[in-house]
Image (cartoon, rainbow, N blue to C red):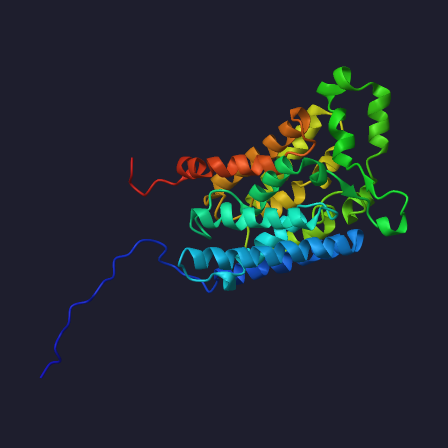
Length: 332
């Protein structure tokens, strides 16, 4: 007697149909590991104020996420480590000497407003850490633009100082005749740290943006782990270089190695949720970030424009996805 034949069953579902072993917690852990070098360098140069700022931001983000999920009656998502990543990224984008209560306010805004109001991870239209930094820059302009001098405990006579970006602000060719004499431009150029100091991070700035070498090591780790692709960082940095060569002023390497270009291109603009998904879209996104960053640096009120540039491109990311989405085979 033949066994009873059964019809084949097919399960119809939406994409993705191919799954990997990666998870949100694994990806977030990789990001945390990639941020360890720049975190260590920031602590070395800025000391205990950096430690307290990092600890405050991370702890506040974790507590805020737990309270928000509890208030909304949803599952606790602390275990996916996304709140830890947000807290660390926010801290690395803050001056080491900022009052801790301001760090608490920024962390609550990052999780409670920029993330959980929209439904939590995967639903926020803007990068939470960058949104909080922009909010703090507008609300607390003074403390957010007051910088500790690297290794300041060795030179107690000079605690705060100007960043290289502030010195480079008036060095663009378009501003030379209106805002600065050639002598003033040459003097500003002398205040830019040497290449070695720019690479290791021996300059004033935010905790995690000063060391290009540490950021490059972290970015290389993410590329090897295939957490990010090369499209956004390369397009971002290449646009900054080309713009610098065309506009004149400070050397192109100084524009790349100072401010938030490196950490923005490698860790902030590459956020899965707020950046395009297609390869072409990533290139367009990176180009837009680099262009807006340099336009703000040259013509804006702030010497740095990386955060605002990425946030603006976050807003148009869905449109970029739509424009660069490949057409199905056979579709007109």
